[in-house]
Length: 396
Image (cartoon, rainbow, N blue to C red; front, side):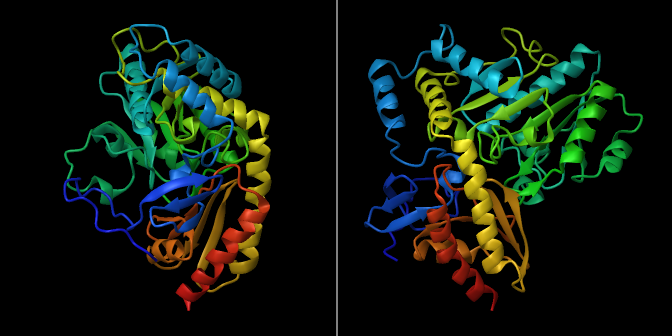
């Protein structure tokens, strides 16, 4: 593997990087600065929805850059209205706020929940969050995150969170029994950084009913699992429910930084002018990227593709590796797949890159696959052909 030289000593030491610098991409393939080719099964961590150098997206972005890249929110941005209307249509909710990242979207959700509580006369609102959750690295979203390793060294954490296990409605009821300060339940439909852990459909429906019964906001973080990745626009839609607050980011702009909070009637009017804002959020370039991403996804049938190719990929992985000693579970939905091993397996990230495949390992022992939604079944087979021997060798 022709590694690049060490990174600049002038950047902060915040990432455990592989010694690779990517130069360009085409479809589901990328090349590094030394000309080595890789099959991209990570999509920039679920960001590059349309792959690389998409023939419909690139001209649209070039057109927008030539017109206007940024204008602040003192002025109307027409594509904000267009993208908001589309997200409302796809989600069945009513209003959207735009920001730049998933962290910002989740921060806005936390603020919405707190103001919802304060507006009801609750002085110290509390939000239910989950074990192994990941909502970001700001102080508030870090506090909502369920990973002590990423929280360590940043205390004191923000108060106001009650943590419960996944898929256990009795535990949720017990943790909140008689607590008049609870205002919201906040979770990822499928935990991404936590190891591709899925909320069960019946549990999602039970939590929706509980929130209705107790006048809580149901806030569903779809930052990683949303935007068609599971074969529906948003992963919670498999359960036939609607949240009150839905943070989005990652795949919404196909690589252009973008975040959104989509809200239903219960939460849509909580924020008033002056309560929340952003300089870069909703800028013309990001809005065009969001509008065009959804248009192309619809034109090219990428939800159906994600469902079909994801089923094929998961099946191929199960056939090759499912019965192997050391493979605990292959799980996920659509093109969001995790393979849990019985030991830490971070070394597979480097070994896969050496073999021409980009993946990640999350939660120490889960191989995570998040390819672009344009991936074909043949490319999924290619992915398995590269990955399976590496896993078999690793587990020997």
